[in-house]
Length: 305
Image (cartoon, rainbow, N blue to C red; front, top):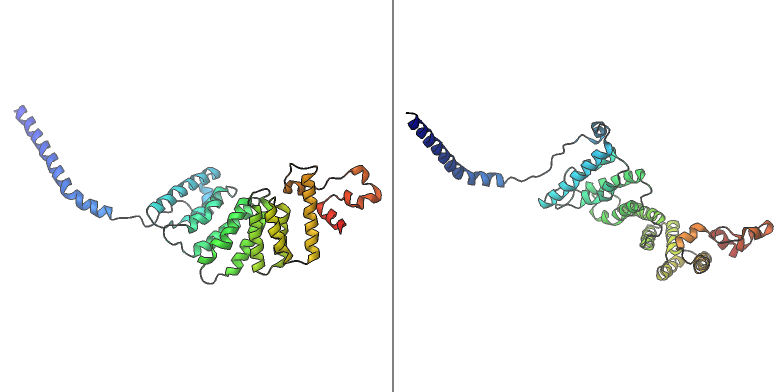
């Protein structure tokens, strides 16, 4: 009796397994078609709003900012692979800024995240990117590379895509100011003269003569490339009178003599910081107003004229 019961139970199990296999084979193709046609249209924003996320971090603000940034990069790549927009990227950027305002990495990616997507980015994303850059620069005003990225975006990349009502000329002028600031901070960067020249061109197009002159003077003073300086000087002569151009040219020659003289290994930027060489003991009394005793390049140039 017991053997027959065990045999019966075995047959029941086999029958159930066979029925399950047949059912799966019959249902699976339709389920695959149904679920395969479902696509993600936008991601879920699953963190608190920027004004609340600081409290939610429980004091681990930098750690949470790193975690959010890692998630954003993965989600951005996933959105690209699925050929859809990244809807909440602006909120993620605001959250990272709220958590750690000195966390610079997200700032450098902001315009890419907001405007470079598989589908056309909404026009308002360009305004949001500029606003984000401006707030970021308040937190890290010494970041030359960020000034450069923000300036290039504001002056060149964004204007063709701006929504109606935006002043394109104002955007380009704001971008020129950012590039000029980058020019101030980049120091010995090899592309510095070109950034300054770009800013000068934008200022000139906008009719800002003094800003144009200042940018060109920076090119002439900082560029080690003789051809770059020559081109900048030719452009400057079209903007200023001959006397001012000559004065600046004399200042450049002073720097060149210093470079070839007692400071041959220093760059032009370093020489301007160090100032001209002089003998303190021989510059006492009335002699202190003589050309060899001038303690700045500007003063020495003024004494020459």
